[in-house]
Length: 284
Image 1 (tube, rainbow, N blue to C red):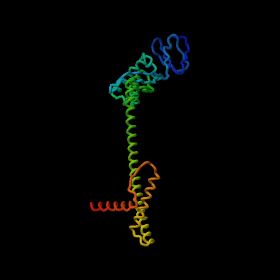
Image 2 (cartoon, helix red, strand yellow; image 1 turned 90 degrees about the vertical axis):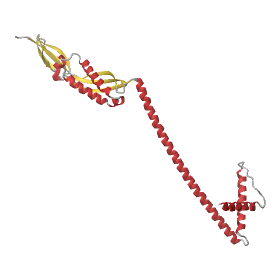
Image 3 (cartoon, one colour; image 1 turned 60 degrees about the vertical axis):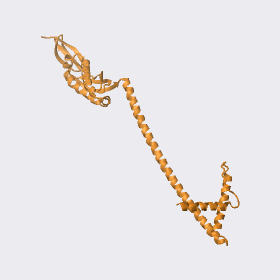
Image 4 (spheres, helix red, strand yellow; image 1 turned 120 degrees about the horizontal axis):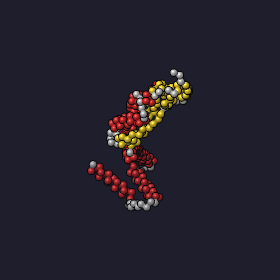
């Protein structure tokens, strides 16, 4: 039986499904081909490009936080299974969506919110594994799946931000307290070192004064005939007494001190100091 022929063209990214009198005949790849008209006809041109879709699923976590999970799926028709993709599945997007819902609502409720955020790759891999097995029967290849968003309720996000802010403030307060403690310890150590050095200086100063007085008494007693150590001490005491009066007058800071002042003041002051020292020695 002879018939007329006609030519058709298929684009690079498509595959043509040919039927002969209503029955599947063959799949024609990209290029020019010939049909046996009127028995053969092109019933579909199936795109082989990668398709993209996003699936939004509402679910809750193990700690009863409702979240919105958005999964991106990249899929395409396998070239050797074009008839299965065309004849076995009517709505591929709804089918993929149902499988994504099943995996998300089966895995996320077993995780707490923090764990879900940390396990986005695990969730995406679980979705891809389930889709790859299920959609391969219909001639579809799952190229990649990504969890592009995991969004809890606004009140939950605000609470999480407050918790995080409180933790940061507590850490900052702890660090500040440690810094103040270190400053106080260092200040106390510096003060102790300063007082120690000051005491050492005072002790050396007093030692130098004693040695100077001793040298002065010895030199004066040697050079002045008839002068004993007691006379030298009286002279030094008088000198110190007048120096003290001069310093008080020079300061002029408004402080007032009353001391007995007369020709015999020095001898009385010496006797009182001696008496005080002797009383202290007796009581000890």
